[in-house]
Image (cartoon, rainbow, N blue to C red; front, top):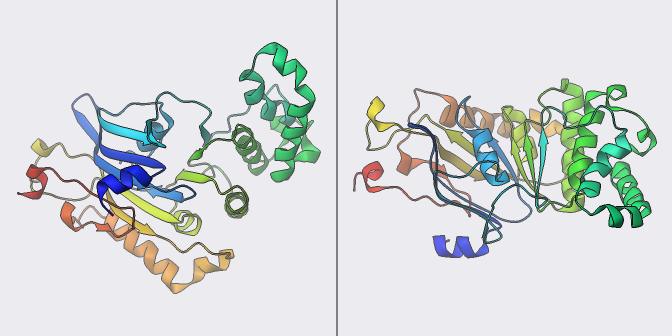
Length: 300
């Protein structure tokens, strides 16, 4: 698909995006087109800029060069169109579960309107608490909940604002393995029900392959025609972009040979500092993948 067509038809679109901090380039010419309803999982070596990429979508940071658009408009500053769930639970310890979920809607409207619709807001909050299986815990405080329950409240906090895209930054990283797997299944159930677009950053390759409809590797381990010395000042690029099967499945798929083989491929192509693909040879086979290389990168 041509770049112009992708730009016109994409829900989220990065074009020629760079992010630098001082002289250090972190993200190096990122091109990314995302369709509505995808679960994009993002993996990569430590320090490659995964969370930076997420913050650009959120609008918490601006590109040094290039543009990020959502539905054809610059993402701008953070707003309710983009929900965010972090690894550290974003709950107010002095508020009950119900009041934590209600905090966003209450703060987004004038006091008088908030008073008039308080009953409707409360019922809506209970709707989302039922979705995440916590309606009976509405009076509890965060310290009375398990880690998985607190993360469910954080997800309900985001969902009640009806975001166009849900951003998740290592959301299950602090959970024990059993709870983490339950939360993965829970997220897939929510995705099936709400048809959300999800941008999910994780360091866990098994989690990324299990959850995603599409997986990106962001990596600084590659080469191009700028050379390999420090003068290149090379930042991370998307070195791998492929679609993943997303059908109703149990966690037993994680033990299938093809699942393990894909994880090994991802580890080799994105995490091995000795495996340096040229930028023009990246594994970018997703239908929405595209790449623009500068003359000095491609030797033309």
